Length: 451
Image (tube, rainbow, N blue to C red; front, top):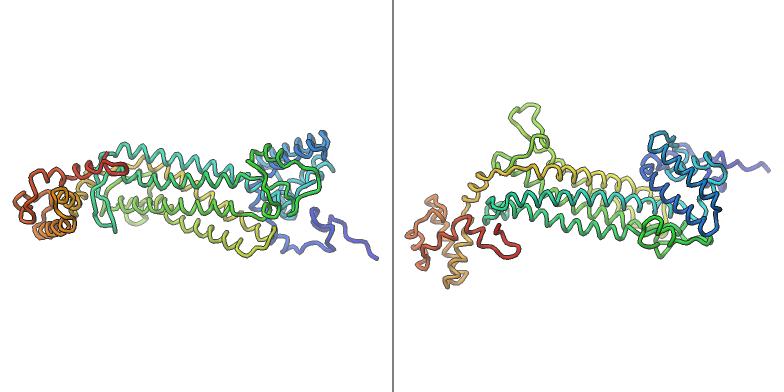
């Protein structure tokens, strides 16, 4: 009987079961190291905690622990300096680091994997990585919210038309409009922090799917890594990717909000609106039309929204038919998650830098608010306060607007005599509510438009 091939002819992490090396194409097709190397520092962080815990429960000696931690420290330095030699033959970030550790400190490096599997290891790495990234996203989101609030305070008295159906509705202030954006982002911020709470659960210790017979202490590992608690079911711990989907769902909502803001910025910078000016550094020109100043940053943010939506649908589809527990399908979770994070961080940075530098064209906004009979509702409310039923008041104001259209006069430009032809309850004090300033100031309740 011929001898079995040595493990050197197959993969060192699982080659003992196999009688021939992996096909070269399959090796490349199944490898993830080209993208999951991004988890390297978090993989080392998790391994340091795992080794520390193993020594604490007596599975490793203190000397073995110290050798492992020192070796991992050297590897971390190599990675940060860009000197680490990544190999597709070693499949993923975990095996690349473990192989280098064994090369550095000998057989002790092979003991690091005691009591864990790549299944719970990668689940831990992703959670560590995403937790740190969420904190970065939260910081940029807070910076954008602060910028919006500061700009809103500066523009608290700047009157502009409010729109429904993109038609002039009632006068509002630019500050009030900006704070509507802030409300969207406040909800996003809450969702993000809530997502972080569910990310912050430790899978390590679940091993491949059924836990381990070694006397590990998962609470120690959770404490060392800053997790709130260990995951309570080993099957779910290694196969759960809800947290990645939830983050991408948050990101999709955030991008939808940024896209709505972008659409308004694009409209407002157009010659037809001319409500605002964006700094040149956030715009580009045309290769053929020298007069153009294109709002490329908001346009690109608007375009990138679909990209994030696609990642959300991709992750949902990835998980929809998977039986418990871990499946190789889950290797496909990282690229969409990584790209979602990169996209969201870039878009938030662009907006957080751009928003405080927006300049309002106040005169243009005010003039636009004068058009379209934006105080018509205020006239109806005035009539109701004078005892007219609202439906009758609505009819009276409708007739007044029709008259104004025929004579090209806004309600505030009509004389008292002209208004009397529609209702004799109208008095001279009506002009206090027909002005744009009076209209805005009158809505002084919580959530209203009064500066």
